[in-house]
Image: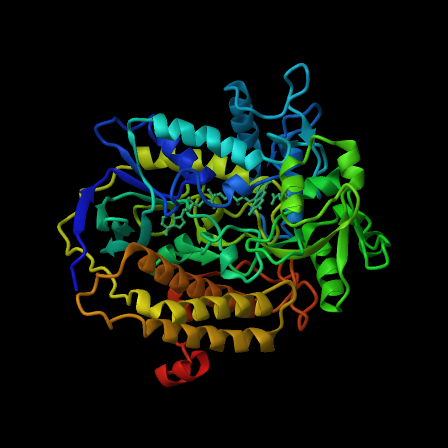
Length: 550
Ligand code: FAD
Ligand code: SIN
């Protein structure tokens, strides 16, 4: 078996992720770093940008309209979060968010504007004002990150490494000392005292999701394995209206459609949301998602009638129209079938206001972080905003924080992974873990199903472990096999973390609904935990795993 090269590169700071959070962090960092000490930006995607950011349709929430105030935006954020939002941080988000969006507008980013150049502001559920800035109609994320990616490519002091899969963080004496990554041409250890996780969400750990395939929660589990504290992990937001077609990811039909008048219809063609909530189609996202989910669980399809929205804004939804056309649907003539899908993770790696985690030298921002601004339910269009605000905050803190020089340490060994031979088992494990998580930790949860999912995921983790250690030389697997194995391992741990947290929350709140505890418990608190709290959960043996998977 031929050995794969292993090289060591020194870096001032490594940013992992090229979505909005990673691009924002890297661009803000270059104000503080010289070309002689470049920022390394790793992404597992083949090019910039990456992740969920280019998929974002609705827009960015910012209190910049006439009469709107950051205080009002913060109040809406707190109220959407079902009692668990840190109000002071929501104020920072809204205040600095408005400043950051104004700065992007002043810099000429191509947001949609009226004839006088003022931004056109849309309205989304649970926002008390029209405050959603968008670009290219419903192509906001794509337009925004394309512009930032161009700036990153042009910056001589950012070294971009694509197709670079971060496998693990190295931590010695409680301090980060580098990132072990599989690049196309071999293993690379990026020796650095400063790592920023901007790796996005966990949607692809669920069978049905709006997130792209790379949203496997890598940053969450890299941080967890490095000893970081996690919080709010049970809170997963399901988007109510993804197209009900056989596609992965499930194509999103933006909430802005309902903001512009689109209607939800039952199988008889009748509206039903007015009976569920006074705000009808614009009720909080979890309420709409459960109302739709309950009908689908009873075997009744649900449709979205886009025609009122398309009539109001004929140019406003090019992405949605293209997605419908791709699946042979014509929303100008007929309502289209919709169903909920896993969409956004409110929980993540606990950070302070500067994005610092409890592990020295490790920062997190964007969807992988838990800054406390989303609580149990994120307000629509607040996540792009969070990436902008906290990406900049992280950059400032990374630049200002002085850390002692790293002492010499033993380099980490790449994991031993089977190559092509394990592919069939890997695919089976991945499909099983995604289905298990969607079924147990979906819109409606209960203790018995969660416990059985915990056992199943533990068994799958043992089965996955069988793919290690069989390959002699240790690091010979090709880059694609390493990534598929790494993502499968990460999905499984994400699943176990979500199930652990969902079992611990014996109440219903925000996006977390337990049919066996349907009421909110006013005394309940947010949960923080580390990977150590999962120890002892592994109930499976190797033999069990082999029987149940193969
Ligand atoms: P991402 O954009 O997901 O980027 C993550 C990056 O990390 C990628 O480059 C990925 O390749 C990289 N990465 C991950 N793991 C590794 C690894 N192990 N090694 C190397 N690289 C790695 N939010 C809004 O505010 N408004 C909206 O309108 C909106 N619409 C949305 C529509 C859709 C369909 C989806 C899926 C989400 C939407 N969201 C929206 C949510 C929002 O897009 C995300 O929360 C946000 O973009 C996350 O940004 P991020 O930079 O944290 O992560
Ligand atoms: C949407 O456009 O409906 C998604 C907005 C969001 O997730 O913030």
